[in-house]
Image (tube, rainbow, N blue to C red; front, side, top):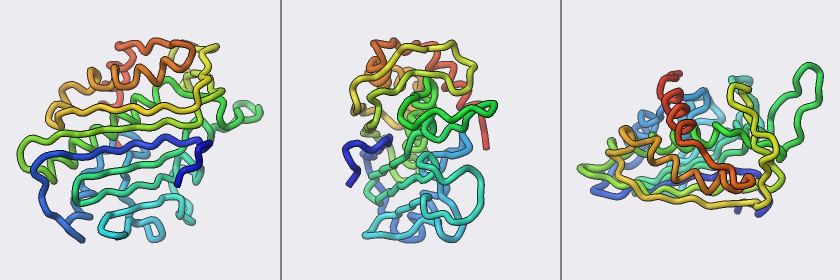
Length: 234
């Protein structure tokens, strides 16, 4: 069970349609091939390193990256300690901490305390990546048309201030969230995700950004960040 005060973002989806009956090693290999790499830490990443390789558990494929004891890319903070599982019946779940809570200080300054910042672009990238993963997995598991019943839950928001970690966006100082958590949901056709990703993301994420003193998420920002994400390959 996730504590009520946990600083985490959880996302999940359910595929609808004529699902195949893949099991065991064949299903695990399908999940590995469905990973969509548009960032250095993609959702539902399928590692092969001993200690964090995905495993079978009660009929599903699970992975916990927080058990990594070896040196490797990234750190072992909450944002790089994903837990995920995917079931043969098309259910996927991902738990991840906030990257903003693991920032290092600049020029000898102390790092910002965890729970104080919320980056303006990361939810666009992370949610977009999960939706693209759903499209990829649906293409492998569903015969014919497929739907994606998507849900996300952001917790630990109260007291966070909207910011731009990259510094490439305009400053947004003064937009602070008072509400601690919010749930988002949408149902879409898997086949339309690629062509309509910005149009899907903007209304889906608007309520999240509105928690920060009624900040209005610009549609142009969503479109620009989606294009940037698609132009990045790892």
